[in-house]
Image (cartoon, rainbow, N blue to C red; front, side, top):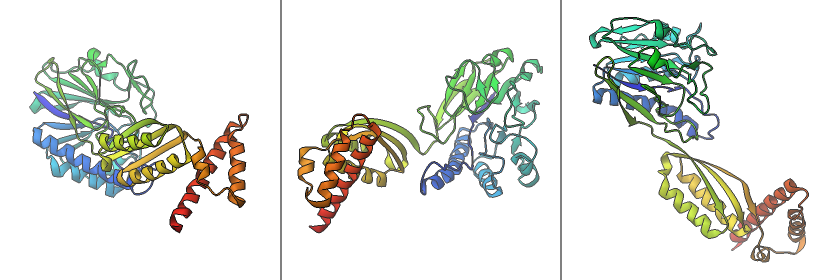
Length: 378
């Protein structure tokens, strides 16, 4: 019998350059904390090992401090065996992070499987067959050798690879190499532990992607998990349980707005649907609002931005449509009145759509600033 946690795509050291402010730094820190959570789960479940199927680190240039923090998080929580597989982000090429680890970060319980050769766990009657990436870009199926490998027929066979499974993924993963979708069958594997796809997915018979344990993108792909796998004996169907370990949610939401009540509904829906201080939300807005309602929306978005861990708003499809009440609320005399008149004429330009959109935005900004000055003067 062999029990283990299957995980992958930690990408420790990921920069999150697209996430503005302090949020990116907090995301980097959280990835280490999630490793601690995986270790705690491994200890609690008393598994025999943890298998990390590639992309342990974001790059081969990851700092020594980050390596040390990662290994401490692993060792402090679980004193069993850890098996690490080089992926496309941390391929086992010359000068790789794995060479530095062997020189400076030796740990008797951490095994780097950077060669395509079997690793026997005789105490568990199990053999692990790794397919490490030894260069970042490799178009070959590195699991081919699994089919020809022979050993004691009673040994449990665990495949360990990183890449895109042929014919099964609608969109390929990041790694250039593909893997046969019949590999588990042709190589007589009891389980094929895969990395590269960042969501949890039972993609073929006895074949799973664990996904990244800490979500890292705006995709609805069931990220944030590890897999608890139990193989009782050679040829038995593996028992696989999904365990949630992720901290942050990466969510997308689309909403049409046509009035102030819709804006109120948007805020209520967001606060009801998400734990905001643990949520990165990509919000896409469309529809049309009066200048006053749009001004109200901006205040709501400001409040939500303060509450959420991270909020990204795309309002490029949300039109500003001045109402009679909006225009009555602006002093139409002098320079302001001239600007309003000019911008209104441009918003009706059906030939130059981009110019009309820019004019609506300018009108909204003018209205917002005018109201701000008016409120401060009271």
